[in-house]
Every structure is written in C-alpha cells, then in structure tokens.
Image (cartoon, rainbow, N blue to C red; front, side, top):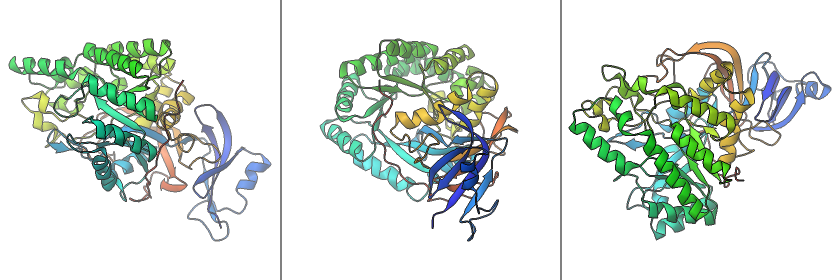
Length: 480
C-alpha cells in the first residue's frame, strides 16, 4: 500500500499562483491539490490520522497548515560544502550543511565539484560524490568548476552533461588557483554552446585586483575593510561586460554568480535588453549587509569577507530593483562558512589571507520572506527567485521548485507570523558566528518534507544523513 500525507488548510504559494488548497502526497510525490473545503479535498483525508507516524489503518498523516503558507522547498543553486580554500576547509560538511539547509526551508542544494589544475573533471566530480554520498539530509546536485581548460577537459564536459552535471563554473578571479584566461573561457563557452551546458562565471578582474592587493598591503592597509576596497565595483562590472561579450561570440548562455555591484547589474540589464541569454544571481549578504560590516573593529570585519565583496549600502537599491525587473533572476547563498576562530583569523595582519566566504544556507528563505514583509518583493516573487527559477535555471523543474502533481514532495509549512532573532546560538550551521547576528525577522519554517519524508517536524529535526539523493539535471530550462 502507498504512504499518504495530506497538508491541510494552508495557503499554497508557487511562483505563479496562490490558492487555499489541500495537498495530497503519495509515495514521495505531489499527487493532487484540491481547493480547501471541497469534496475532493475532504476525500484526501478519509481515514488518516491527525498526528504521529503512519497508522496501519490510514497509512498516512494529516498536517494542519491552517494560517500557514505551504511553499515549495527552497532550491539553493550555489553552495560550497567541505570546500578547501585558502589553506583551510569550509566548516560545514555535507551532513551539517544539508541539515542546516533543511532547518531553513531549503530542500535541494547544487554544490560545486572542483577540477584541480592538472586533474580531470571526472576526478573532481568523483571526489565530491564521495564527500556527499550517504551524508546528505536533503537532495543535492553538482555544478563543475573548470580550472584547467584543455582538449580533454572539453570532451569531458560533453560526458558530464549526459550524466546530469549540466553547468560549468569558471573564474576570472583568483590567478594561480581557479583563474581562466579569455581564451580558455571562450573555448569552454563554445563547447557549452554545442552540448547545452550553462557557463557560470565569477566575474571579477583578478589580474587587476592582485595588483591593488599588493599595493594596499605595501601601504600597510591590512584590515578586513580593505578586502572590499581593492575588489572594486568597476572591476566586477568590467569582467561582467567581458564575460557577456565572450558568451555572445560563442553563442552560449551565461549565468553570472554573486552579483554585488550596481554597475554589474547595469551590464546584465543591457545584455538582457538586447535579447541575450544572460542571467544574474545575487545573494542575501549583498541585499542585507554592506561595507559597514567589513569595517567592524577588532578584526570582526573578517567575518564578512567574501568575493565578490560586500559593497557600500547604496548598491542594495539596484540589486532589489534588478530582482523586481528580472534583470536578476535568482537568490542563492554562496554558502561557504569559515569559523572566525582559527579560520578567519588566518588573515590577521593580511586581509588577503582571510578565507573568503559567509554562512547563509539556513537564513536565505527567512531573509527573503522579510523582504516580502517589508514590501520589497511579492510572495510569489519570493518563491520564484528562491525555488522555481533556480530549479528551471539548473534543469530541475518541475521535479523541484514547485507544488504540482508529479513534482517531488519537497514542501515547507511556513509560519508567516512567527518572529525570530537570528543568532549563532540558535542556528544549525557548523560555524561559530552568524552573519546576521541579532537580526529580527518575521516568518519561520515550521515543518519540512523532502520527497514526502518529514525532516523538520514542528521545529524538531527528524531527518537523517543519507536520505538526500544525488539528482541528475537536464540542461537549462530558462532560455529565451
């Protein structure tokens, strides 16, 4: 017999609709929706128990969502679990990071496997499969960081697309680590144009930035705030423009990650106005934090070092506007946490040695709901930028990112009225500080289902490592 769960009495919100409906879940998938109070909806709950595990009589469970939102599980298209960087490793493992994601209402992550220079894509992908397999609380997929473009790498890109790894990240930053020059970028883009892959770009002029870093340190400017000052907004905009033109030459779509500067948004808007398949992602840290945080005294600013860097507060208006006009399509976290103690502290006396990255996988859905409360975006746009569009962008839709018959039952019961204070004392990420310490927000995850299995039950974790499955992806579903 099939297992059955009914979520009853909530407001179902997707990117396209809001409807008071009951949701029927069978065998891990959405089976049906029916308007609340109709005979069809009443039929969903016939014989089911109100609480507790599935009963022999009803083989199912009813979840009361009265007064709550019922939303798709979040899709975070940009995370770095267990990522080695700057002589250390990101503090969240796939186990701790995916558990924290579930607490925050995210039910799918797309993490980055890394090709080492001199190594193959296959070796990098296999290494990340080994890290994740059997350890994840929620479903996961992979992008591939391409650090070494050569003829063999280009052939491997075709093979990875066939097995569901359909996006490839390149870096215009970090010379000597991940950096690709324009020729390597063009070759990879040409290959993606042929095999359907999506090129993701870290758009900063790393060669110029390294000059500015060297000059700043020579002047004795070593504090964390100088990290933001040397990684200039104009160098993000220049690299964004160059990436767009290279993609245009190659005839390939382009996805620019962690857009932080208003000048870079303007480059994306121009490209989209010209009809190009160019997309942009921003992150909560750029929407809610600023260089004020980088300038916090006593080295506290190190907590906020990430690349692209936090910008002066006036850039935030352009990012919010880009999200409203769809010049920016996605909000992901770039979750890459390093503890302040023992990791961020590696850069005392030299900001260039501070590991780049912020924790945030647990905070994204709540911060974006606060933007709904504040009137910056609508409820449906919240779901669009956090669930539906990342699923479409990365070939997961409609399996993920929506509530519709046939979709995976990745569902969140969300209390829009509950208030919380974000803090390292209460979060579940494996990091010793919160980038949003003391921030009051309205709205909180109450219950989370991943493929029909309850992983957060009335604010209690009931999930398990190994429930999350690798999810192959199709090619980008968001093209013009």
